[in-house]
Image (cartoon, rainbow, N blue to C red; front, side):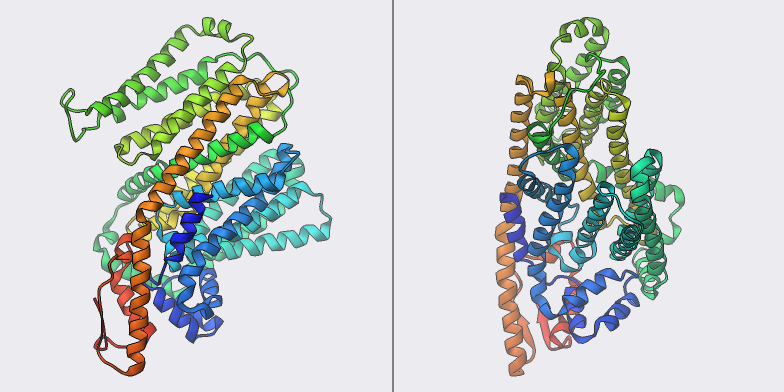
Length: 587
């Protein structure tokens, strides 16, 4: 709860930044359709964000500090609604609403901490464009869950199909990158439904197909707006090299951005927090029974070889780093040597297990809980290191690759004991999660580079949500299969150890989030105080007719902190206060 309260409180310190004053002013001066057409002809082709800003126009500049806490609150309850629909599918029998609400708070806190740019939460224009669509997307998910669980008559199915298309059209219309991510997601989801066929295909295919077609229409509508041409000309004016960028350069830059987004430290820590939360809920509340025909748990050569090969491939990443204090071997610091020792121990341990696999299987016989419990506990202990900011960038990449590969090996062993009809759901579900996340990030990075020639972090807000939900899916899936593999479906001593480690990991990661927010809290408070004082001064002197109006500089430059444009902020402030350059001097 503490991280959420801090995010909401920091949001209350938000004030108009960059072009916010322009949007607020025009929303107050124009009617609904005038406002949409005005900005579509000047900035870009998106329309849903303009609709929302026009509807919020009566709130004037107060909307900038009201929106973040409202957005967080809506995220919590909409996420809880999705979870409440999912919990019956996992055979959760009791406390569903409480579990859904508590778990949604943890997920939203993780998402807020995983945002690649704080613009998406504290800058009004960016939060409407990239964060609000995640709310409408939640309603689309609720629609799909309702259709998947309930048999529908022809008329109700038609209504849900139209509603699904409308929600997709609205969600895609917030931003070009949102439409790209939604198009990729629905394409993969439609393919997964086709593979499953059966009941899910009959109930959900028309809704997904309607959403997919609506996204295509939305993309065409946005591309055809006059503001797109102007924006591209402006971007080419700022970046003359953009026109000369080759396809090879585009692909290389796309790859680099993809690596940065996928292995981002904050996103990985949020993923780990969601995994720990999902694991705790699954081990405590999900009902699991022993699968008929399950085989004894044994170490398998192929997944171990895959993990061993991954660790060998990571050797250049580990050894290529040059420490700032190269006191050991002329390259590494003492702390980095500890990391190298851990990597070597993992390689050595995997090699020994592969060499003495038969003997290890004899030891494990009759002790089915030891392997999954111990392996998952080791993974969970490793995850909090992602919260440490002082580590070199290559270590975060190492942690991401190692964590995912170890989870894959663990899931491979556990699900191999179950009938294919059980395990294929997990394989297909996690495969879709990874495919959607990776493909959407790559597509958004490529389009951003092609259009603007640079990495725009706020456009990847959707990826933060996907990564956190992916972590939750890992936690729930592993917790469920660990209970299935336990004797008679009961949690043994090792399961309780895993639960304790998961809880400690969640607390450690949540504590890191709180520490990060507390560090910036005083600056946010100073900014809000100074901004309000400046606003009162400008309005008072404007009413008295005193010119020019000169203001003192703000103690904390929020535009610089969030990397927004100070020049645009000044020009929009002139428009908002209805003054010219000779009448207002912002220092």
